[in-house]
Image 1 (tube, helix red, strand yellow):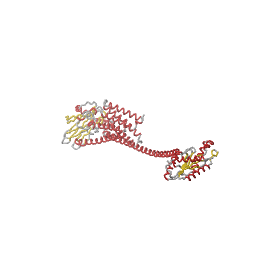
Image 2: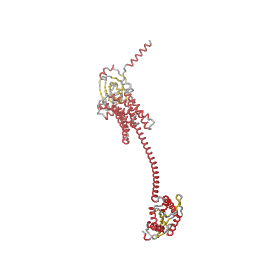
Image 3: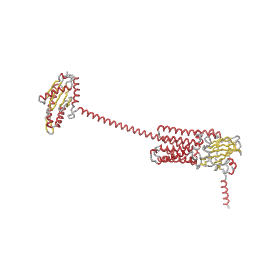
Image 4: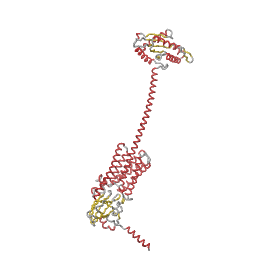
Length: 610
């Protein structure tokens, strides 16, 4: 018996819960500025989309009205029309002025009916399929002025239909409070928001013109596309940018979403340097996504709005996932640039999923999915700018390090070059000295050759004349030298010449100069030598040669010389060296004629002066 009663009570309770409940009326007054609508708004789904206000009114009691427990009803993408009902009662003695706001500027058709008792006071039809100038109030969203007479109930019926996501965030404000505070506050916030976006865009555009880095250009184009998309989502675009183009308003979401996807994918492609990695799977996938976005952009005005928007939003997830995956994969690389890049993708992907779930009606439209898309996009743009800045700063540091390395290498190279120059200079100096030796000395004996002896002797003669010092010239050659060559060979002759040269160098004074002026003929210029001193020096040379013991291959070779001396007086001026050599030669010939191995001295004739 008890179980039967319990079952009956349970069924009555379930039946009561299933029966439609009627929302209580909303009482308005002169002190409230913002009204809570969670439990006073009812909604009805018209799946056919054909019900009229009269049919609604006539069958009102039999219709399945449901209380909207939330002020932001969200039905996702739906072909149905939705009706909303709210009853207002004015407790004041004077009429109350209110503003009913639907904060979703993308609804295609919105119609408001105002009934007092059974009388239709006004019907207002609007929506983004109509010209912006036809709205009851030229606001970004849909704002309806509502006047509630004193002590008279006012029932509002709102019909909404849209090809896009049917989200109907209803708000009710005091008229003056909304227009003097809420509206101005929103405009200020939006001005600051888009000001930051424009700053980021202009700054990176300046960087692009300076660096010619394609990643900055694609970032600028992405910010521009995303900014236009957000301007369309909050109504700024329709009001200020494309107000005359009603048809464009129906497709701008899909168009700007596709453009954002194109430039965002291109930005990822360039930021990750995939253009340098031929055969990269990630790079190929991004190029395919870019192609898909371009195709969707071309078809966006030809296919249904809700299909193009769904496709664009779902396709947008691909570059987002690629960006996040690439960032996580390179988390420990590229320093702060990759950290900012990864954080930008992580936060954007999380909140975009929330927006998508709200668009498809899976989660309710709350503040999270209402305005978060704009703010998460702004945060993404800021983080991307920081990533680009860090990338540019890192590249600048690398360039500085490279320049320092180049400077260091140049310094080392300069030192090495200086060392090489010093080495080459020393080698060149040595080579020049060697060349000078070769040019001034006789290769066989090491004595001055004829040309250099003549030059040096002339200079010394001129100096002696200028300082009035005595000077003498000795000409000598080897006696019977031809017999040495004929008897012992030319090698023996060369050996004799070398040994004679050594004897002459050892016997002469350091101030004297000696030269080989012929085959076996030698000349010696005696500095500060009087005629008697010149004779003594020449005789000493002759004796030293005669005393030499020269042997070649074990065979002794006797050696004597004949010499002629030419002396000049102090009074003789401008004496050519050749004149003194001819004078000494005449003494040499006389010594040979008188039997060789002797010295003959002669004065320089006065007639031989220059």
